[in-house]
Image 1 (cartoon, rainbow, N blue to C red):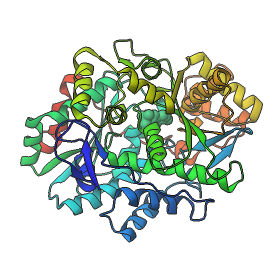
Image 2 (image 1 turned 135 degrees about the horizontal axis):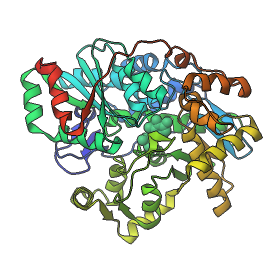
Image 3 (image 1 turned 180 degrees about the vertical axis):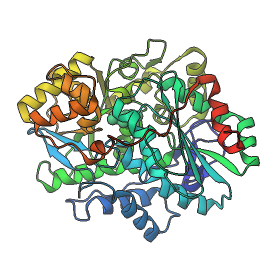
Length: 491
Ligand SMILES: *Cc1c(COP(=O)(O)O)cnc(C)c1O
């Protein structure tokens, strides 16, 4: 299987695509075709077996037994036997919990696997350089990457996060990170600024040369890396298989998936699952007040000339949704010149527009909506009062958007709601849905537990009392310097 760049250039092997993270032309790697696999009637082999079937189809050069070992090692850190369990909320709705990994958010599903894929890919490509993993995070990717790559030989990780733009639990998770090869720096700017800064560093020949002289090459753990996307396709299949096994749906029956969306990686994995033969009716793209994607799915115009809002669902606070480029590539019938043109428009004017035919194609599968902060809080409280199920703000955004989708369309298709974070990761905001919350995240978590009875995850209580090890804050313009310093030995 070859991988093509959305902006043209030579195709790559899976291993090359994973090691590089981004293509030399600045495009994202996509598979040259979508392998079809049979979903199984039932959960016979469970998560690991389905993960093996899905990932092997995209990684034909990786030994089957090696892949099996990598998957077993990646998911043993999850605290649930199903890895990503499915919880029934109502006759039509099921919640897919993606946050049973070590950092309490869905990024673990991919980032516990990526270091294994990276190591295997380095071996396959014969790469002799060490790999410098550069990450921009809106909160969750950073910790998951630090945890996934910590003390992995031949790698170094640097995470940039927006100063003041992440929750207290998210910040603590990152700044208390232990490990010999990990580094964390806040930046004065929002997530888009940080992500743009990282992309510029990737595009800099000068930085690449400086690092290469010292025996290093840059790679990405952001969801632009195909190795991030691939493990996420799996849970679309496992959740479907679970619903069949439980008799909630008939084999072959179409389902909806509703996804709180930022960089478009999670929901894109659902589109890949659909292209692989999973019976999908609609993929519902849920946003908060940063509703650039809602507008895009309605009008076909992507326009990031708008204010950036900080919200309590901060992991989906975004204006530039990188993985959308992979969908655009398909909408352009894989015409990389057209993708380059759109991306040029985005870079220069912050805007591009799809032709009408592409918009119509898009609407066949995708629906979109957004909600406000008040809606998010109202949803958390109402769902808990009605069902006893406690949602984090991201999951609540998806829930609110889904309910409105049903009101608008009357669609009674069984729906899987992707729950992307444990509610305690955002304890203060979640408590605020019920009563005025104090300033201290941990006291708020205790209070939340008191009246909801939902247990506090161990990794949350362990955060308290860990020393803060990473104190750096830098200006956006200093990001390149901050990247090369540790390698050139000036730090
Ligand atoms: C990253 C993240 C998302 C958004 O996923 P994308 O793949 O960027 O669309 C949603 N919720 C949480 C909690 C996240 O950490």
